[in-house]
Amino acid sequence: MIYIALGTLGFIIVHLFDIVSLKRIPSGAKPCVWIVGGGLLIYSLVMLCLQSSDLPLPIWTTWLGWGLLTIALSLLVYSLFLNLPFRKTYITTGVSDKLVTTGLYALVRHPGVIWFVLLMLSLILVSKSSLILIAAPIFILLDIVLVIVQDKILFIRMFDGYKQYQRETPMLMPNRRSINTFAKGARPTRAK
Image (cartoon, rainbow, N blue to C red; front, side, top):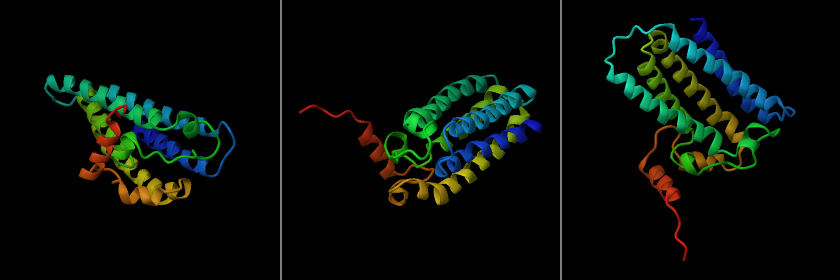
């Protein structure tokens, strides 16, 4: 259970990142918060997966889990580190000067939550660990609660135009309109 506590602490530290950004705490604080919080979360997930392999799942679920893991990690990394301007978001003091509403952020306002849920499912399938089965819903719920705080309190203060973005783009579950907006943005433009 210590690893679940460490993962929870990691989540809380990662989400302090937004407060560090909003309060314009000096250079170096943002990457430190991300590295410490993310490191705790990753360490706890690895340790939870390695603790036991006692879930009686068929062998094919392991292969399914590896496929989901590849997809979930790729989309999570893209959403958090490539779709957002990396330097302005994670290194420079203060808040990034631009609200990102394109790419995966045209689908939903918090795409990382979707990919994190898939990541948790994949870790259960790959590790067959009963401890990660216990931790996954706790971490997912914590992620959703912290994203609600971001959405309702922090991001409104951090980004101009966030209220309009809230009206136009769903929070966690894509709808027809957001899927169409995403698809239009994903199409290559033709030269005239």
